[in-house]
Length: 137
Image (tube, rainbow, N blue to C red; front, side):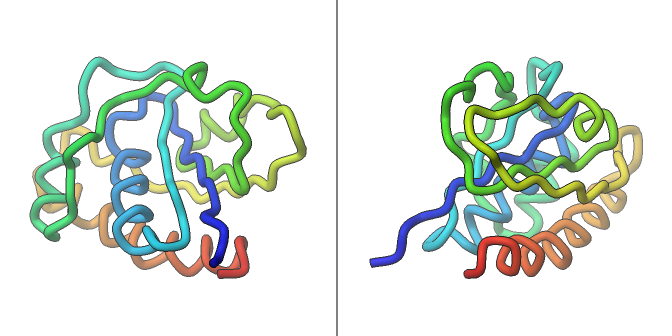
């Protein structure tokens, strides 16, 4: 039986891009990956546009919530993915050497649903193959 790989998706607010990435990774690679997302300065709730974009693609949103990075201190990850430039610059050091990748996605905040869907699709199209390659899945 293959070992499930742990992936942390990190963003500044953990309200949109990182949440969509968490949901997509867990849905599309759920038999190989356990993804969680966190924020350096998490918001109090997920962007409604992000939730609507996920629902539009039939992706589950149950259990998604903004989480602070501190919640995961001491946990081991096989890969850390930053999805915004601020998270890349402020990404902390983890207890053991952890591979990191920076894949920036545009912030659709303030855009209509179509903007969130465009970012969702970009995340799905690019992040899945990149994570598969990085983790040798």
